[in-house]
Length: 616
Image (cartoon, rainbow, N blue to C red; front, side, top):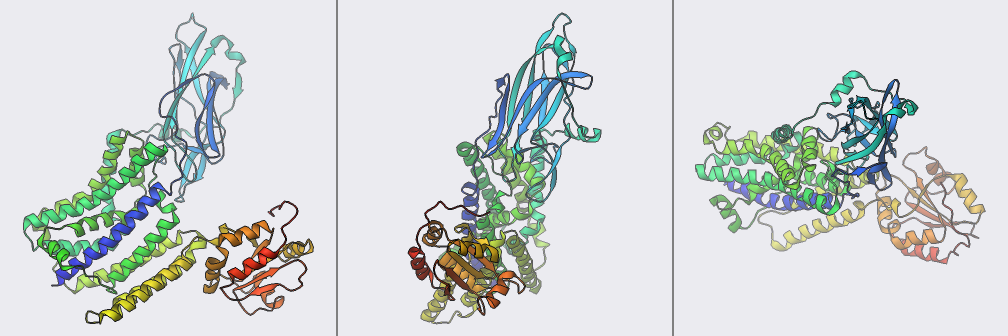
């Protein structure tokens, strides 16, 4: 009976969570990714120079010319670019081995030396890691040792440049270009002298290290294996253990089939990634960076709230049953949806902890042909799924697992606390303006879940049961509508509180709107959503040239806090004040439902006769 109940719980929980999370993942991958102009992945022939990469306002180009470095003559490759578009200098810190900047040359007329690179700069990537990069203007020198045929005085040199260009937010497709130049060897003494600060010899040696394709595939497989010990997979470990223990009592065929279903769920997640990679490459000409999904605030907030719900499930705060027809298929071995769903969820929950070698293997896969890339991404999934396939195909190993007991329930509840820690970690990664809203909603969501799971029981009358649950859903939706939207500050050009700026605006007969708020004020967040997130009000503030002031009273020594009490004689927040030309006293609103009144007052303000000049 206990196992049948567990199977029901798993089915319902995973049916919901897999659907929600998969929608979040695909939305983040395809819609959240800004696209860039694709870089050419083929060799081109050019005599002067060319643009290597461009993304929005960021670009980098390269040109070549004869030059001298000390006593050596050769070809200088001169890079020009903006400050945010960079190339990786070392293979071990690039997005994947082989994606670092490479420059090589060949000639039928000259003997060429090894390329001499400038010293690199350092860059802090989105994960806080210091990496070596080339950025802006820098030069690489290729020495010419001698002419192959003493009778020749002129010749040609082809310089091949390859690598991957990245900005602080996105990496473009890897490229490979060839530049061509003619050399007059007799004129070498007149070539321009250049100066290059070279890196240490040990660092130059490190740049020469490259890895073959088989190494990257092996790395992908090992990365998949490593996912099974990531802390982010812990939330589903109790469910996995319980299912494996239950399988030990079934026939060998059913045990193997359920184990393979779990593996299929893992592979399904990586198939989604491979499909997203194909879409981005074909339609947008860019690549999907491992970890980019966590730069999407909507996905991060959704994942954190999902983890809170799973923690409540671990604590036994709610249970969900499914129709007997579905549960009977589960227990008969004919339906394996829960096993597939658990595998899919386990792969999803591994992503916050899977940077490092997984990122390198994934990035390498994206630079290959579509078929090779798909195979490489699926190899990661095979690495993660293999231990489960082995374990469930050997009943002898399953029989050695501990028998079900109180330890299992305690273990499950303990993982709930680990789950909450991971949720908090994700929430702290959100933009500052969203953190408090998500935290407030998480508490309300927990309360609504508690209502759903404990206020009614199996014997509760249907009318009361539906009434309680409708109230819980309405409360969750209402608070979500209030706390979860993006900050309204994006609609209105709020200025920080400054008494002098306000006084200057009033002296110049410019209307002023002051919004007194505080980070700890729940009603203030409601005002943000119900008043200042309205597009019509934001447009009126812009059209009427109203100086919008955000007066932060979070702490008692803030200037706005002092002014609220000593100048405006208001006891607390939220308070909004509109100063209009000709009025000595401002119009004040102390509640939360004043949007229409504010709109009417704004409409009465005479539009400015001169073009508005925004303050710095």
